[in-house]
Structure formats: C-alpha cells, structure tokens
Length: 115
Image (cartoon, rainbow, N blue to C red; front, side, top):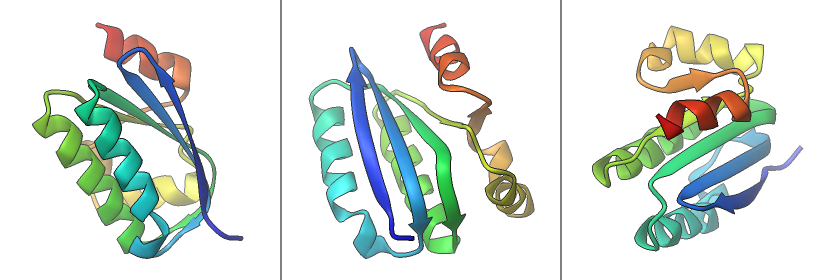
C-alpha cells in the first residue's frame, strides 16, 4: 500500500491523518510544504493521527521528528494519536515514546492541547 495523507484545520490546530506505508522522504515533500504553510499562517499545534498507518521505518520516524522540531520551535506541540501496536513497538524501541506526546484519540489530544 502506498502512502497518503489528509489535513484538516480547526482554528490554530492541524489534524494530519496518515495512511499506508511511510518509508521515504520523497513521499512527504508536499506534506511538509503544507505543514510549513499552516505554521506560517498561525497554526500552533498538530495532531498526527496514525489510525490507518500500516508501516513506518526509520525514515518515517525522522520525518515525525522534523515535524515535532518545527512545531516546538514555533511554540507549539505535536500529539500523536491512534498508534498501531506495530508502530508503538518501534516508538518504544527507539525511546521516541518519551519524546512524543502520545494519546489514544483525537479528542483526548485536543483536550491536552487546549490546556
């Protein structure tokens, strides 16, 4: 399965839903451009929804880190939600589960970011 994404904006919050296999930087060029544009337009926080992700490798993880760095440098935060078990194991092994704010649902992420 290939990679695709959908972006939904709610006020100063961006919800990025990822789907499929994320294994290469060339897959996310347009996604980065859209995220950068939205940050420049005032978006402070991003929720990354992984409910439909199948596979993620180290390149995919580095992309998450780049998004997190960009958002935090602009005073916001990133919350990762609906993490499949296979990807959660990868986050635990790499200890990135302690770097990312991980919640079980978009609703809980919104509550976290509204504080």
